[in-house]
Amino acid sequence: MSTIELRKLTKAFGSFVAVRDADLSVSAGEVVCLLGPSGCGKTTMLRMIAGLERATAGDVIIGGKRMNELPADQRNIAMVFQFYALYPALTVGQNIAMPLHYEKLSPADSSARVKRVADILHLTTVLDRLPGQISEGEKQRVAVARAIVRDPNCFLFDEPLSRLDVELRHTMRSQIKEVLQGLSKATVIVTHDQLEALTMADRIAIMRDGSIEQVSTPHGVFARPANVFVASFIGTPQMNLFEADLKASAGGTADVTFGGAPLRLQTDPAVGRLAPASKVTIGVRPRGLTPVSLAAPDTITTAAELIEPMGAETLIHVRGPNKSDLRVVVPREKRVAIGEALHLRCDPRQTHVFDAQGQAVRT
Ligand code: ATP
Image 1 (cartoon, helix red, strand yellow):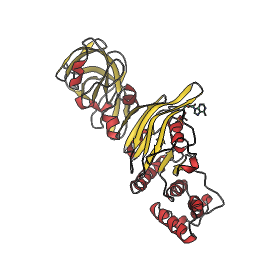
Image 2 (image 1 turned 120 degrees about the vertical axis):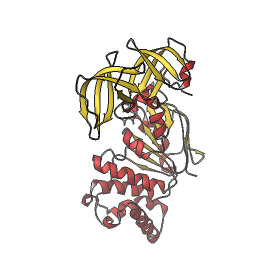
Image 3 (image 1 turned 30 degrees about the horizontal axis):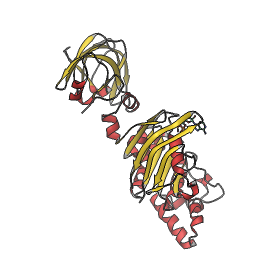
Image 4 (image 1 turned 90 degrees about the horizontal axis):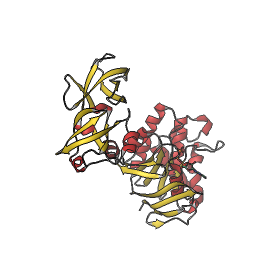
């Protein structure tokens, strides 16, 4: 069975801990993206799974078998790197067939396998060309074909699309996703591109400073971020996050002060468990702030400072009561002038409350 399990996986380089106590399970056919800012430990984690880096502590279990002591070439893992070096003097077909070299297949079996993956990745017409004679997108597909031509225990991808231009990335994301869906293998993809993670992953593991902060579905990390870091990392434009003082909360209604101004919010009932006078961080997605015509206890009164058309929508920057910058996204049809007073209501489905430690408060 193609599965990957990491238990308390840790990697230290001298006194610097690059990955700390990582627990992660990837089931057969599942695609998990490791997502996080530069230097958070994504590649180190992938390299430990691959056997290219030795774990300082914890276990790497692949297909139910502990792999810690096995070298990379005995783990039967297919890996696609950011720099998918193809052999320039070999044809596309020969490049794809390379990993089969060690399997001692007959030439007929080998070419049947190459033909099958070339079909899947739409490379049939370029099999006889050299890498210098195909496009970047085709090269990327050859790298994937080379990985899937064997029957590996699992797949690891390290920033597989980062060298492609925006349009090609878009096409390749869906193509790779489609290919992976047909293979029933546990797959881990490293990326720092949240769009890539949101579109390709079944689940996303969000990392910061060597630790996994949250593992959830793309919808889960967006709609139910576990903490302030995940909330700020996922979503474009970024979630508005502002500090507030909790005055009282009961039955899903919380009264807070934000920059000295009172504000009533519809929140998760769990906020009622916080002590009155607690410091909290309120998070509201820019699309969760709706301009309404009149000021009310549940609105934030601000004025539009900067207006950025984004096509179908408009991004408005406003100044919150504590002078922080807030972002509001409205449909293009909503006309707003600079300096115009705005009364913004927080959509309860897009309003999050985080405690003084930055952890989400919810049932
Ligand atoms: P990026 O997105 O920039 O590739 P990343 O999340 O993949 O970053 P890693 O490459 O895993 O991050 O690195 C995590 C941390 O470990 C970084 O601070 C890096 O400098 C450090 N690191 C990685 N390899 C080594 C090494 N061989 N020796 C010392 N420190 C290392």
